[in-house]
Image (cartoon, rainbow, N blue to C red; front, side):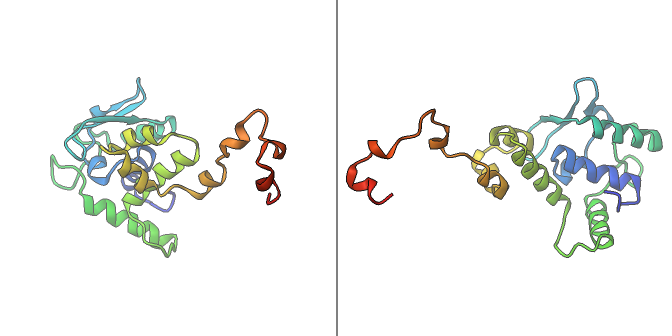
Length: 182
């Protein structure tokens, strides 16, 4: 995020990643949606008009406090150019593209890529898919499962149930005909 020079843009992109928010949810955050005592962010009327809570990491809390010291927002956490409006979706997308070009990343990256990275990084760190589903605000577990495209490291580190047994099944217990082929 160091390649995003504008603190407002850097902060909102960090929020998208750190909380797994959609751009439409991040731009509509209000100062009152940040609950530093309970360490949660309230997402009001997310996709499907559903309210939910997501985690507020200690690092993100500090980043938001630094942002608050700079801008002192009162209503919207990220104000737009017009009085009383929040930052626009296209402004956030433009900031993300500018950072991509500055870093010379050839692959396409959008603010939604940050949400995807949030989910994959949680999965790789051992968070269960149901928890990720709730954090992302998905109604269906199937949506979350396809969205994640389970990371290779997770698949490779998964143990076979056979390896978890206290005493593995010995060849002597197998059918003698089958044992010859093993």
